[in-house]
Image (cartoon, rainbow, N blue to C red):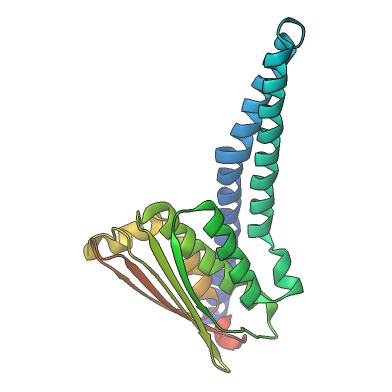
Amino acid sequence: SIKYIYNEIEYGKLILTIQEDERKRIARDLHDTSLQDLTHIVHQLELLGLYMEKDPLKANMELLSIRQGVKSVIDEIRDIIFDLRPMTFDDLGLKETFESFFENLKRTTDFEYVLDIDIIKSTDQIILLNIYRIVVECVYNAVKHSEGTKICFTCKCDNEYCYLNIEDNGKGFLEEETLDKKNHFGLSVMNERIRMLNGKIEIDIKLNEGSKYFIQIPLYFTNKNL
């Protein structure tokens, strides 16, 4: 029917949009971190070549700096790979993957994280992986833009749904700006994922009162998901 064709086209468009946004995010992450760091290392190697004969002590100091720079790039690339496909997801499950994600954030950010995570089970691994990506997008958004100090994450499940609650104590913004700010803060991909999974999201964001996201995702695919 015409309605079926329209839904199929709309669904395909959402998939392509999410794929393109993911490519943009990866390209941005590589450009802003690893690529710039590698460019700096190339300049350091050029200096090292000049120092080696004239100033061996300075050359050794430069070599130590280069070594640390290479290690930093390896860590950055490892983080990007983890975001693409967390190793713990296949080996241990979604709960452990969330815990690993937040442990890494504790080491790299100044936020306090309060967690309450259920064991999450579903026969549809793609749903679990997308739940992870939705939470990551939301938490990264808070870390980068909220200017807060604390993030609370709750994940509860029953036999049919996964319920996610993500809150920060950041600056928030005016309620009438919410629709415009979603795209500005990179929340469009998250909303598209939730829509594709036939989930629901409620956003409560107010100026100087932080942000709250309430998300409900079905744990199994049905015809409504397509």
